[in-house]
Image (tube, rainbow, N blue to C red; front, side, top):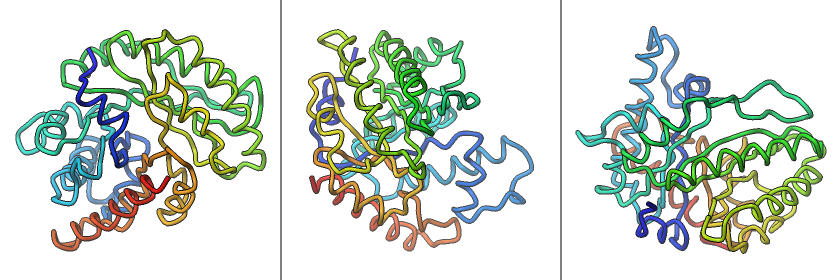
Length: 297
């Protein structure tokens, strides 16, 4: 059963989603950008301990709260850990007023037809059940579009909606994330194909089912406005996708009704070596700039 208070916040709240869901493959880079070199840990367990310290420092900062941050996407290991003695999702909602979301995909398959589908998730039902037990509101699953290939784009969207329906069956709200690589020459054409496929697949949902969409910032401003206004879409959010925070904010502000769901752009400038005062001040400025861009439309 969807938490109505959280649903209302996600539907009409002012702010953005913090993507704090780096997984095994992206964690070393995230730690390097935070000033923690690979020499600081000798195995995966130590690496995940360090990334949890980073995430905990962000989440417990006085700069981080539900007045500007609507929700946070957690990695599975983060959900399973605690922050200040409470389960992470519980701390987020009870102490910060931030809706807890969960990354559920297991990474990307090899490229075919210009896209990368999600790897199989044979234990997804178990993970979703654990998410419900932990107070998770919704999920996020990512695949990648690397070319304007109609066959590939259709396959990505079909898989995304198949997983979304599995998520919905557990009473959770899925964030569908078919990321279009920002550097490809035919990005605008890929976005045309993507919008058409998403629109078609939205019609396959029941009238009482809603999803969220996480999309790359489009080549043409307001390209996804019809999806923002669609009755089966709770929210359209944008990923930074390799743009700097300033670039991403500038593009985001041009898209009416779209809010941010930034990861690297959110943590840009943060360092393990900063004092708490410096860290909180840097994070505050980052959160405020992303908030401003998210409410600009």
